[in-house]
Image 1 (spheres, helix red, strand yellow):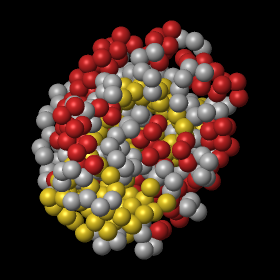
Image 2: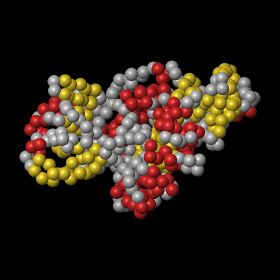
Image 3: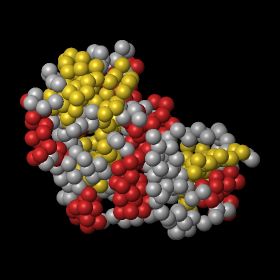
Length: 515
C-alpha cells in the first residue's frame, strides 16, 4: 500500500474525511471472537476503515441483515469445474466466494509453464481474487506420461516472476502465486529426494497431500515444513495430522464429502481448519454451490454456524498469509456477504460485495476467455487396439470405493472371455495417450456402476490422457474416437446414441459460460 493511500485511509478512519460508502445497520460477524455486532462500517478505496459513526458520500442501509466476510476457497483445481478462471470466478461470486486459492496442477500437466501463465492471465477477467499455488508434481507419477515436466528450476523461475511477496501490500495483484501446491510425491519427501527438496525450498507456504500417511512417515513428511492436508478421509487421520501441527482442509467435492472431519472443529481448533472443494464440476457448482454449500453441509452435520463462518473466512486467510482479508475490520478489504440465516441449515448468500461494491452486475456478465494452444495428438482407435488377450487366472482389478476418491487394488480370478462380467460388475477400462506416444493401456474396473454403453473423457487425473470404460468394445472405441475428433471432451455412447461435451481449452475446460 503506497503512502498516499495510507494517508487518505487514515483521514477517513479518523473521521476527518468522508468515506466512499457507509454500510449502516449491519449485523456483522466478527471471526476473531465468533460474535456478532449491530453497527455501521465505513469503506474507502475498497478497504474497511472501521466500525462506528462515519459519514459517507454514499450510504447503504442493510436493515439489520447479517453480514459475514467474503468466503475463501482454500484449495481447488479450477480446471475440474470445466470452466476457465474468469468464468469460474464469476460463478464463485454468486456463491459468496470472493477469494480463491487454486492449484493449476491439471493444466500444468497438459502444457506446463504456458498453462500456468494462461490461468494467471485469465484470473484478471473476474472481480474475484484468484491466487495460485505452484504445481509441485508435474508429472504426478513416473507411471504415466504427461504433457510437460516442471523441474525445481522451472518452478523457481515461474515463482520469481509471478509471486505475491507481500499480499497485504499487493491486494490488487490477482493471479499471483503465493505458495507451493500440494506435494503429492510424499514418497519422495520421505525418501529425501533432492529434486523434491529443491521444490520445497522455493516457497514458505507449502500445501500437503498425504493420504493415509501416519506415524513416523507422517512425522518425516511434516518435518519438511508442509503445513496442510486435504486428503484426510477419517476423524482419526485428521486428528493425528491436526495435533501434529498441520492445518486441515475439510474437503467437500463432487466425489467426496468431509462428513467424517466436521467433529474435528471446535473453538480451540477452528483456526487450524478450512473448507476446500478441490474438484467440483460446473453442474454441481450451479446446483449446490461452493464454500457456501460446505457451510450448509457442516451445519447440517452439527457444526455451530459461527465456527463454520470462521473456518470459511479468517482461518484460510491467516494460513495463506492473506492478512488483508478474512474479516470486516480496519485495513482489510471490504469483501463481504449479506446472508439469510433464518434457517442455518439452509444458509444462503443473498448478496456479495467485493471491495465494497455489489458484484451482482459483474457476476452477470460473461467475458470471453482467450484461446489456449495445447497438444492433442492421439491416434484413431480400433477394436484391435483395446482387445484383451485370451487368458484365465489372477489379475489386478481397480476397485471403486463408493463415496471416496481412493480406489482398491483387487486381485481376482478373471477369464477375459467373460469380460464384461456384469454379474461381478467388472468392465473394461482403457487409457490412450494424447501426447503423441501412441500408447494404449487396457485394464479392468469393478464397481463403476455402468450397466450399458461406454464413457470416455480427456479429464483423467493427473496426466489427463484419454480414459474410457464400457460394456462393449465397439462402444468404447466409438467414445474414444469422439473425444479424439473433438480434441477433448466428455462423451457417452449407448448403442446408436451418442453425446459429447467438447472441452476445447487444453482438453480440460470449456470456453463457454457456465450457463
